Image 1: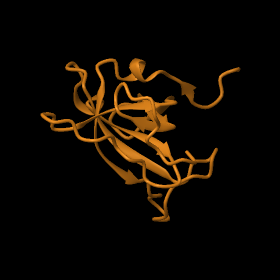
Image 2: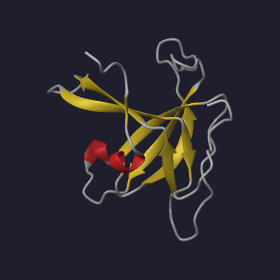
Image 3: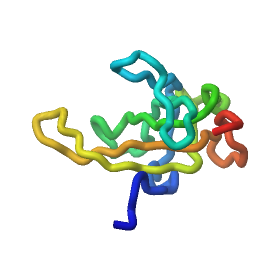
Image 4: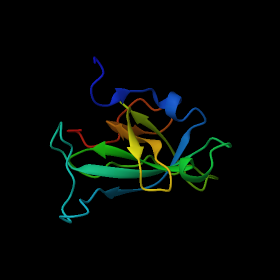
Length: 131
């Protein structure tokens, strides 16, 4: 099969109504309690907790985590006056489908990754320079 690994996807395909960041935290290996690293780059992984701005998103789909590989913690865009959360866009997004069998019924779930974070409409990257 020609498809191997994560699939590239545009930010607007994943978040057509936009997204808001709640915060960033290091991804820690549950068993070793050590920081997780990206298999491809060897860089530490950071999880950005995101609220999907889609008014029809419900349950687990409303809040997701997007992982970013970067040497240092990615910097979120500046706050916007009058908004409770920071609007963000992700650059270089990929999606990896997998089977989540932790519930009563197995379901298809998606792991989201990105190369960088920026303010909506901004041109520059906001992740670490080595990301």
